[in-house]
Amino acid sequence: MPGIVSARELRLPFLRVWADPVPRRGYENMAADELLLHRGEAWLRVYIWARSAVSYGYFDTCSVARNIFPNAQEYVRRWTGGGIVDHRHGITYTLTLPSPPESAPPYPPASCLYEWIHGALAHALQQSGVECSLLQEDAPDGGRACWSSPVASDIVDPAGRKLAGAGQRRYRGAVLHQGLIQECSPLPGWERIFAAELSQVIEFSVSPAPWSDFEKELAELCNAKYETPNWEDETHGRRRLSQS
Image (cartoon, rainbow, N blue to C red; front, side, top):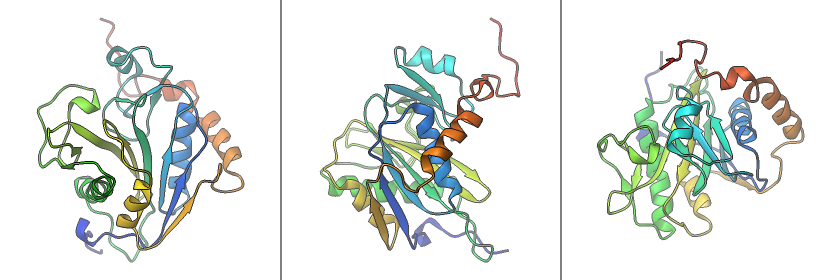
């Protein structure tokens, strides 16, 4: 079996960059990210929300998210892990990495991927007027809110304030990385610099749909998965909720 590639060896041969111009509802954004993952291609998507939204990791709950961040219009369960994130401010992006060929080594552990992706993002932010660096070790635990508990390889400003974090999920060797940038305003074009740090060749698009059947597939996935009662089930099908 091939060995695991290190973060320093990572560089994508081709990356499709999609600056999605359509404001989408919360679960439309989650479904769009999953559709990109299933394409078997590397994608960088930068997108916006149609309504004020808070997202929470796959193993968290909507009730906890509502308690921490009240008054959002949507509370959205992600397919990735990570903490509870307020999307009412900031820039949201997604990076998908396709499954490596059978003859190629698998991706490195999540910590190495975070370091590689956030290292590229930190460089893009620095080139776009933002003073920042990678956090070297976990900060003291600040609770369930993601921005209160920065971890190693999150991006912070000189005062230690968190500027960027993310959640990941692996699916049959592929990787879904959902990230957020807050508390800073990078200059226009930061996403092109970010993409160029990740890949040898990039293709940039601002089309409302990345392929012809996208909107149909998006609606089907929302109806089949993200907008069903099972997706909102706070027991996640595995544990009994406390009645206290």
